Image (tube, rainbow, N blue to C red; front, side, top):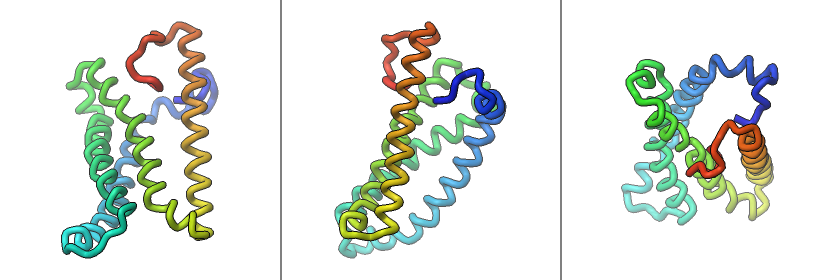
Length: 160
């Protein structure tokens, strides 16, 4: 979404975007399964849970719902049974999804980073550079698209 439309990378990746999304979806579901297995017993046993961890868990549940919705609609057999406008609206949920992923990461890693955990500091820095860089590049891409008349400036989604 941030690459120039006629760049080699965009031309190369565009035909396989759905497949890449499905692979990322499967890997994300695996990540969630592993962590749910360790956190659900702690949360439901009444054990003392750090506020950041509980907030990250609630965010993870919201992310799970969004992930299912976004992942399922990446399959061509689902997509072709949807109206184009509906599919596009659903796919725009990827923007809040990625913002919530970033917040989830911060809630999990920031306390350790603030207490000097080197791995956490590196992780928060890398995630921040990637997420903030993506947002900046996406806003630039949107501005260029508006200038070229590809999207309406009154579009309801800021990054859409």
